[in-house]
Image 1: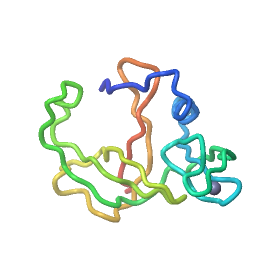
Image 2: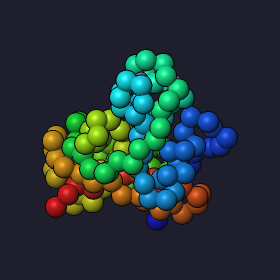
Image 3: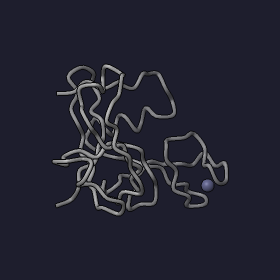
Image 4: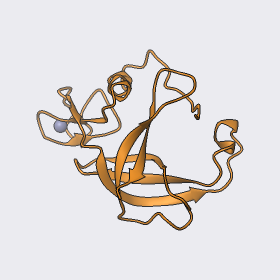
Length: 138
Ligand SMILES: [Zn+2]
């Protein structure tokens, strides 16, 4: 089981996001005043400045916008992962998230732009918070 860096608290912008992750939910925000979808978590709307920015649950499904295959990483946390996929994922609710794509037999060949993916929450060896990653939908 991997052990990736964990979020550090107190941190008022992202704490609700991570609390939801701990419960197995991927969340985003949507402005009550102008309906703009906001991600990553913020205190005010990026479009109109409103502070009425409630969290909503995402379906966790989306498409790969773009990706790269990382073949070497000198950070000890990631060095043992071998080749892995770093991708921007467009969630169906209209936000884009940077994450990993997991579960590909050959990450250099099995991932493509536009591929449908679904979030899952990777448990960590140390720390309280699983990490949201995405897996291709079969
Ligand atoms: Zn707004």
